[in-house]
Length: 164
Image (cartoon, rainbow, N blue to C red):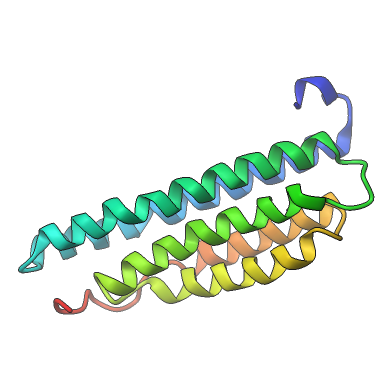
């Protein structure tokens, strides 16, 4: 998509915004969260439960990424449109599902680190409702700002909770 519109500044800026959003999602997944999950699995009496939940949660993570990719491609293909339409909704709803899956995992297993993800998912979900009518640049700006906020607040400040 970018190759076909490489001279369009708006397309390039929005593509860069999508890249920043993807990096934020990556950081939320591979940041301290991975260490927290590993330490919980090592300390719990039932590590199979935590791993089983993690395997199930990955479906939400992948679903969110696919929705984000489809939305990004659609929005980047129509950057000049008056509204982002379904692409804008997918672009925000995908990361919302991604963060909700993370929040679920951390709430059920460790009891920490889930609140920023849940709040981010809720804000993205609300923004996705409006995204259909917003211009593409507004959707990408909202996405980047929300994900940056989640990324900056993702660090769990509590120690892992005892087995639930």
